[in-house]
Image 1 (tube, helix red, strand yellow):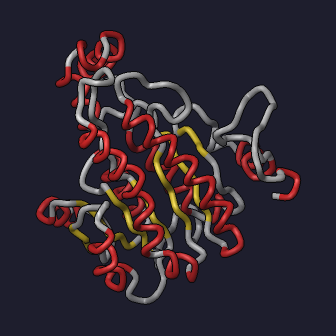
Image 2 (cartoon, rainbow, N blue to C red):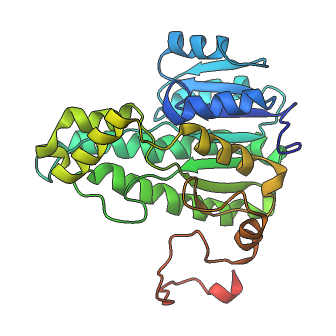
Length: 288
């Protein structure tokens, strides 16, 4: 990548680019000069997004992020020059919402597939052009990744899986110069949160339902632009040597140079870890 504020000459793929945080990320990266590959299921919507972005050229890929065959079919189109500088995996599903036993396993399975497999497939498919560019990957955490999130079992399970996958891939790809980090975007009022209001207090839980309802009513959600700015930082050379981290757009002082230094030097900071100092692992931590 180029300077933090200049992505000219960089090609970045963004899944879930037609709405919410993915859409905000596209706007941020395009403004900084990146050439984008917009991924989503609705071609017409993607075309509208691409037309509204600055810079370019931008391209679109209409597909289901869980479909390996579709990814393989368009691999060469995504990285025509054999280089891909960044991947942002913002596509996500929220449901099912409700107490265990009130939803179908198939609905649970779909969320796991979109959130976990949909994160993994673009990385696997485009690994070689990503390595060639010494590129960077940004995945997304969410509710349940660092604490319990009752009544959102599939979403919570998938997001903690994404963070652990991020840490694993960061370790595995470090030698090739590819960095992989996860962003916790905060309480951003997207269509997914609208699903909580639609589900109602009996399914979502009275306390979380009311918090979400009031946030919509008062407009007190976290801005998606904050998460998008963090994504841009993590894709840039300003984030060199920062990898395998889970960083909160809202709560972590990621714009502070002192905190950035800690992200580079403190191996347990911003990771899925026990906070009592006890670790249980088959891997020799001193040797990793």
